[in-house]
Image (tube, rainbow over all chains, first blue to last red; front, side):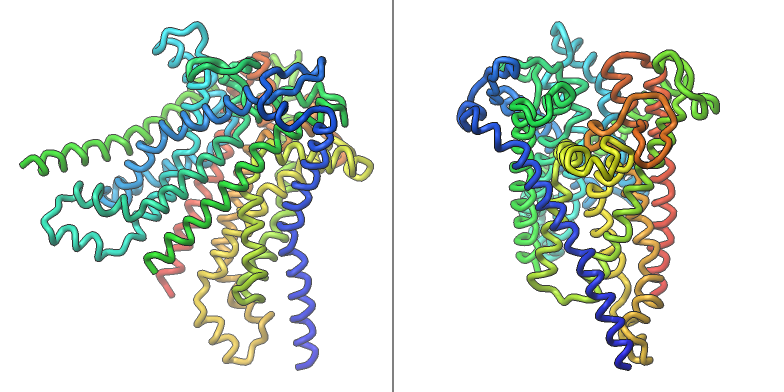
Length: 291
Length: 281
């Protein structure tokens, strides 16, 4: 009996080592990104980096504001496009879809989530870029808008699945109460169910924003990669992530340029971690509300 | 009467939204199929590239993708399943489980290009002497870090879905905790764990940004884990970004897409079996 107990402790200890791996990796990532990035601020001030709009590595100018603005614009556009569609589809799945329709739409959404970002990029590179060029009659379709459209497609599955979950977790009583008052399906949906599921839906949107800011491959292929402050959605631009991807090859290791690229990575990294925490807070709070 | 009409209109809009999503999926799939089907053949899959990828096949990229996915799983599967087992079987909910779960969630949120920067500095610059620098091993381990949260989460759900009563029955018959895990928890959780692993394979095979700084674009068969190589995704990026050969690019895209579709179909089968199991108990 005594021996078995020991075996159990050994296995437990080994598994504990396994289970702190995720934490260790996370800390290592923070350490290495900070270690790679922070030396930049010996040469360039934080405000010059965040607010400057001249990015000329050869001259030691590292103003990243145009990348930050482009990343925010792209994300904003993607959210604007995908939220109405995503929530509608979630409501459809949660409330009105008959069994056969669910059996088609759900697998389709899973598949959308599973398609590699580089394939979306190749698709967008030709289809979406031409669509934007013809529709808006601009010289090149490689714009912020094209990147927003492809990102909107990529984040739809996140928004749909999280919204659907939170709509389905609204207590039955809410719905029955609404029907008992004579409300139609639609009135119940938009006056009762969606507002009640609100915090959960917002959590999903925040998570999707994080995904959009961090996405690289699909964006770099369609955004035009012009290092200039974008004036609107129909301008080309370059995001934080695409700048890293495009310039890492030419940056000398440990040079100021190299440090600056790590700092570009630091921006979405911090934003995304913040959003992830916020999103999971909201989800927990939402669940507690109905429990 | 007005509310009835609004109701009807709203329902039409909801149906349309679902239809739009199906159409988007079909157009992405259709686009890749139509453009790629002409390029793909047995020799395309098994031949070496020629003339700087303009002709020939994509064999080295296929081998490279297989190797990095294998390395990623070899790292992440034991660690991920072990973590899930620790969380469900060895720990009651508390500070420790919360810390582990939060760090796993945070790791899941890290942008893929940040994994790329991390892999580059850790495996290439700091541990380059041990990993062979920008090698398939470095790329595979970076992908392993990236898929770890998925494996933890899916395995944890799978183990929690094994009914508590079955564990109690096992304990009641005098089985130890380890025997219970081996005979009750693991067999019950296998379909769920397998689904999670396949999901992670799909993610690892499709990722580009984390490994883009660690692959070489040389069309040679990787000699060992420490050698450099190329994968389907990085090759696809290179071919389409530089506009070298859209024909080969689409062939590569279709190959990748077929891999993803196959993995997706396999998870579907597992999920069916899973729901049947759940109904039984």
